[in-house]
Amino acid sequence: MEKMEQFQKDEVRHHYIAYLLDYMTQKGMSVEMVMGLIREVSRIVFNNHYVSLKQVNKKLEYLGWGKDVLDEKALQLILLFLEDRGFIKVQWEVLN
Image (cartoon, rainbow, N blue to C red; front, top):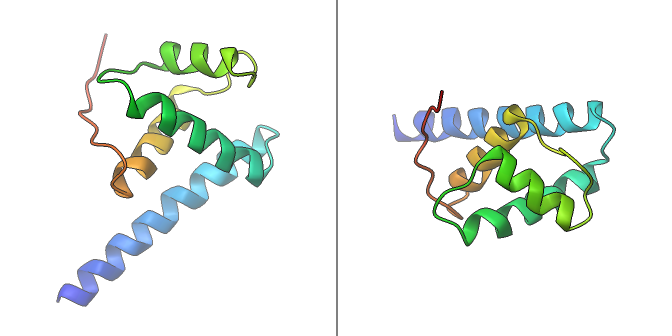
């Protein structure tokens, strides 16, 4: 049973990573750029207790990535990836 659960987790993990790469490459980014973007976002969120899309995009723009590089879906996928890898712990909140 344990092997099946691990297999299912690996399948889900592969699915959202592939989805993130596909989503961002459709927006014109290369795979290498997406990986660099993930690294930058990890640095931004690692040093903050709270992050928002606006805050992350503002910092990315300051770092030279351009204006509004991420949308909500891309940020959530990156945060999911970082949390899954154990780099961060996300407390998800819905804001109206």
